[in-house]
Length: 338
Image 1 (cartoon, rainbow, N blue to C red):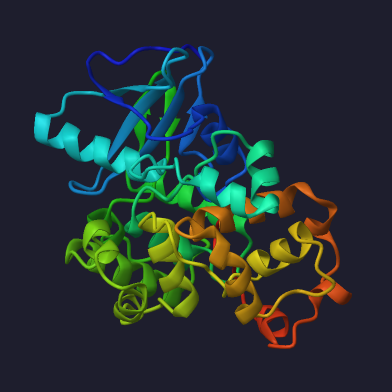
Image 2: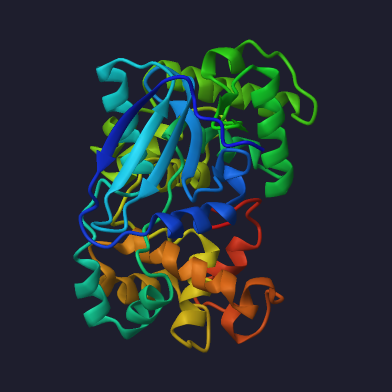
């Protein structure tokens, strides 16, 4: 497919504070099932993202390149936008790529924790890639309930096409989550049960009412944000935590309800058993103020190991807190690296 440039673009620059690899973000997205159909790497090495502008709920595309000289990110927004709209899009891109934080302190974490040092050496310039917005994280959280992630990703792409929520630029078509207004207009959809559609409508309405605003949620204590989100129909404790941690770009929280974090800790630290939530928190104290980032790093490491697909039994699956046995009853997991 030809790398066709848009008729008009608005360019911008981002200078990362601390280590960062755009190529690493591209690799992260390649294995991130919820991002299927919403990102691409062009022949010239640029990473292109297609997502909903969270302010206007319209699809946008952004092409990104990292300069070799100083590591700066040069970006281009496809199509005409005002200065205000461009500023909001750049702010969103920075949050998605975790470029809205200073990563220089990761070196101090690595100095305190040899395991983290090893994981960072294996993934130089690492920063987590987040969902484009709390709204898109919420749509994914509801869609993925009780079905496999590849099936949920396929449904999400079909929803985007059916609702006309498609972004096209640089010779590519991208399929973000359907715009809230258009999602509300759908009474039913193949592959989505009636109750799940009702839950998606509740999420869309919450977005239109400002309840899924990233800045507002990030300004709240995490327990308070989770509690508020749980008032949305279909948003239980897991989905609420997922929205806050993976949709808002939280940097220093530990998702102990995610079983793969506990399994990853056991694998990375050579533990004889899956740690309790309390033990996990003690280990993660050394990761402050990047506990969420390192948790993602640990799960990425688990994915690269044979333990990712290992049977969920044996010493490393036992936990005196019962966290592992509880996790087996969960129908989904936080999408940290799928």
